[in-house]
Image (cartoon, rainbow, N blue to C red; front, side, top):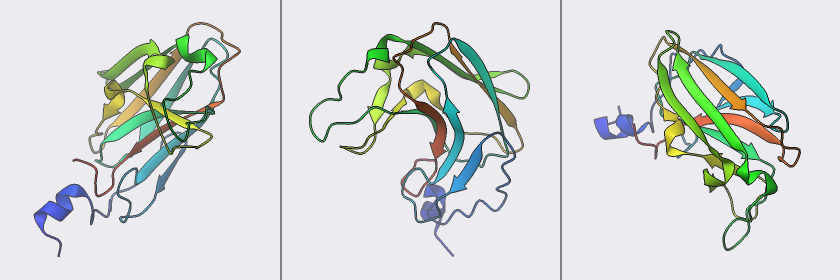
Length: 170
């Protein structure tokens, strides 16, 4: 039986009630994953056109999640990431629970989002500290994202929510 500290950090967390029924796909990379154990992939999103899209998240486990935009923009093997031409585009994302209560809201140019990923990778993961949340058991959520202006220079992108892992804080 694991001690309380191990269970708190998720190394032995089995997510026995994992029953995701929302949009996209949920992958569990196993209890051995240090970070980003759980990934909800909401698929490709077209940032080239002015749009509003809504996704449903339902049946998420009680792990802290961060929403990411994975863009087709390489990370350099050293030095700072090169700016991409769509960096000035304003991206809006919000999350609300099933009662319409806002959990988070972010509206910022993509160049202001934090860029992460593996050095030399062909893709970058963009996120902000405002796009984090820990779902409550039994609640459903709506993710709303909005692009106000058309920008044909925007790279291909997919919307992900990632969280959990034994290194992740509860």
